[in-house]
Length: 457
Ligand code: GAP
Image (cartoon, rainbow, N blue to C red):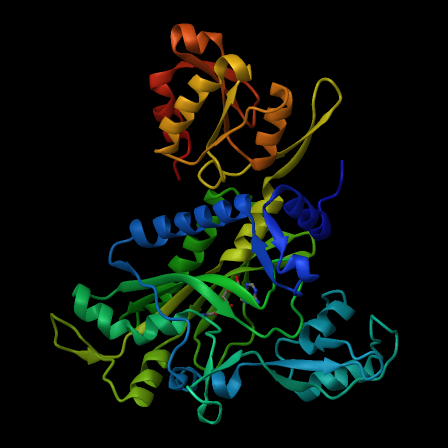
């Protein structure tokens, strides 16, 4: 059995159409990735699962879709312009760039955390412990310096009249600047939540590990606005709620853990990540943050607009506290891909590769297979068309039935529907289960309901 490393997973994804290198025909653009037909479906299903759990199934929960490009003052108010920097260090000899805190952690096999170190302390630690460049082996580094993570772009009609705007480095600000709009238009009462799904961009010092850390990625951010004093209760609730979300989608509890932040940004009261055990170690999937009234107070100060909430019972006026739950889409997809991949030895000694996704996440819910193309294709096409109006269905008529089962296993399709002479005579089909490989016979009119029940989340 092959060991599933990040490299073997990336190559598997490329081979079968989950994820390709970005701009591949031009030699690729480093750390950009394009989701292929299977990957795009998987990712969308993951986003839909989040929408269901966080928006649909929660009271007083609203989804918005804010602009990626926001007024530059937003990023001054948020603190990003002043402080969204990573500590970087360069090898003077081979010019390789490292993120200093990760560099220390990797050089010490995770035994030393630089989370609470100042830039000077990191620099001294690297020098005093004679840490060498892992690329060229030299011990000749620059000082630890600030590296802006914000991507800048420009707007303006003529070259000399351009002003800097930023690609958003997080979705959250779109939710904060729309808090008053959502409050007014929904007439919601505290606590209520605003969430959104969308792209974010960060000029990371050291992107890598396939889709784990990239410069363009997607987030599903969710802000709960609550009365001061109730925030820690909300915080504890969302820590668990996020972890449960991953478990219900198929990530085993023993491969998940909480990581409470030792060093908090000055305005945060508490922060905790859910981490998954990737082959490269436990790493962050999600974050829960008690952000106090910092964000809304700052936007009130910078925009001049009142961000107060008036309690309808007591008439008390206050700026709500915010508890944030943020989920990285691409990191979630990466964990789901690792967890889904299985190799199994069959009775004839051959190996089958199978992606055991939760059926809700599977790119296709079923594949329709005419046993003999000439005889069964017409009926199979009719079934395919009928089921396609209900959920995503694939159709495959080429090669032996065994080969077609293998292909459907690799796509992670939970059900394979075989159309044969019994379908023509009795209106029945056989349905093969991806995980057990057991087959049952169902009448045609039962198929949609049977599959519909099994793919629920
Ligand atoms: N609004 C808070 C915020 O943005 P964060 O921890 O910086 O918090 C939230 O990011 C989530 O976004 C992370 O938990 C992670 O899943 C994802 N994320 C952050 N940076 C990323 C990157 N460079 N590539 C892929 N995902 C990233």
